[in-house]
Amino acid sequence: MNGLQLQEELGRKIFVGFDRFPDGNGDLSLGMHAMRNGAVDFFEKPVDDDALLTSIARGVDLSRRRRAEYVETAELVKRKSSLTPRESEVFVLITKGLSNKQVGSELGATERTIKAHRGRVMDKMGANSLPNLSNVGILRVHVSA
Image 1 (cartoon, rainbow, N blue to C red):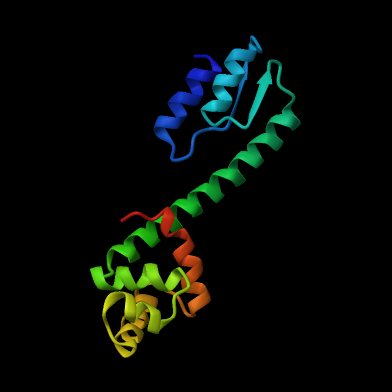
Image 2 (cartoon, rainbow, N blue to C red):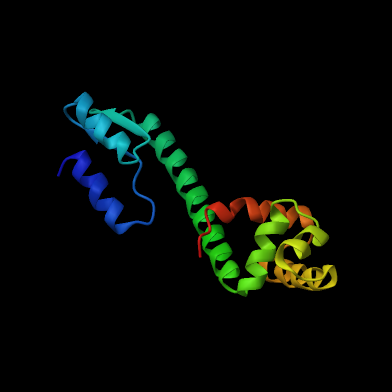
């Protein structure tokens, strides 16, 4: 099994694929293919032990960050899916920067009703402030549930 095959196999079995692999040939096209598939480093054999260990440590850190981002996004998808259709509309408009009064005018509802919807949106989205909700709103581009 060569390094590219190892990378592909690990990519099927591990959440975030192995990000570096050694290759005996050092072929540039093989290295480019590996990089397109997510490799961070490409080593020619023989591999320096310290360089490999440093690279593995960076890969583990990268994998942890990617996993944390994935978990956070999954949680946002779950929270966003708990919103009613009206709460979703309020969420979008509030995170665009519209005031309660403007949202009410846009949706044909009173300001008081919009405040109630906004409160439920903030609770369901886990936001403790309007700026925090806006930060979550920025992520809505990636949360399409």
